[in-house]
Length: 513
View 1 (cartoon, helix red, strand yellow):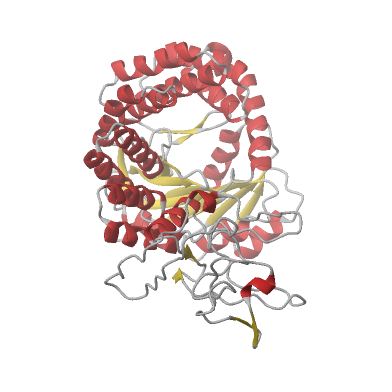
View 2: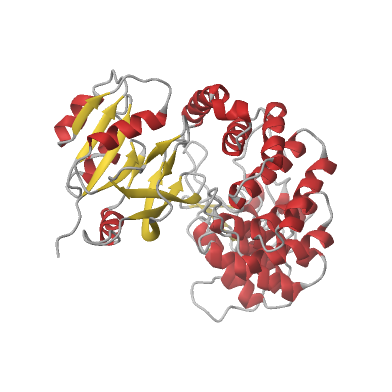
């Protein structure tokens, strides 16, 4: 049976930099590409034609839907996929959209797929593929929406489109101010249409113009609408607006109203819990955050980032339970956070702390090793590594440091391995060991050797009154050094010469490699 054809529609202006990443990859996948240009001056039209697209000029009239409908009118395929010049769809996702198309003799349908906004990570469902038929068109001056007959079925496809147009803060601000001007001049905003009020308030919030956003969001929250997802987001934005303006009571009232209106709405419970935790009311926040995790934090209507929100929710819940003494509950919460973000070192560091409190040193050591593999310069992980090792330091090489190299001669530049908490010595720093290492003195007894390989632990001598910690700075070395007061020990060896340690102007413990 013959399959329907699928083409790509795009509108653009000065997108020569983005076309190689957006239009070029789909030219070998689609049946045709139609590009409507609204006034480019950077060679975008010539570049699009070189890829094989049909390019049409359309004078910009301050209406995005008019330009999109012009591209739709010029299409010749059975179905159309609309893309922006700052969108990218992988080949696998494009083929998934093509497989989701109905057969030619079947009833037409609308195909939805996910759009991921980077770097924020927001994920929302959008109507991206639609048939070229009467009654199917775009509506709205800005943030245009697809309008189609109600009898057309809507299908979901396992496809994802990446949107990077707002990754640059300067470009995001420029686009926000452009969109705001269009929204404020739109008739729907003047008439109090919910969607226009919501988009105007959301745009003002992104521009951090909270005093102006408040009025639009209040009107949107009170306007009748059938879109509960966008209404819920309007209330969340209103609460953030009140918080930014310093009115905590109204912010809490808005969030509690959302939680009471939609008790099964996970994002609403999450934002209420975050607000209570920020206000120092952890006991009230814990049930809200736990409920949010159970309900789920996905809302494709306004683009909630479920992985990011779930990770934060579980991490905050773990911290609250840990501070309240519920170590078992805190461990479950941190393990949940680890599921949502396996490459984040924070849950492993928190679990290592809980393991140390419970006396499970080997488990804590395993967690810290993994955390430092993911983030070698994680301050807290390095602190715990030094505590577990009995005062030894964690080197950049990923092993427990026990025998670092001796310092080079005075006239040679030092290139050794810095230790945890170390700072480069300076003539302006007469006491370079002052810092966190001074709060973690080395152990006076040797810890038991670990059962796994790759661990080399050397006991530290008692810290003298005049000598700093062995792990506190780059130019102190611990292991088996000699002192002039201990004739039974070997003298310090440096650069092939034998020099008593005291003659170098130091005393106490040292290390050699």
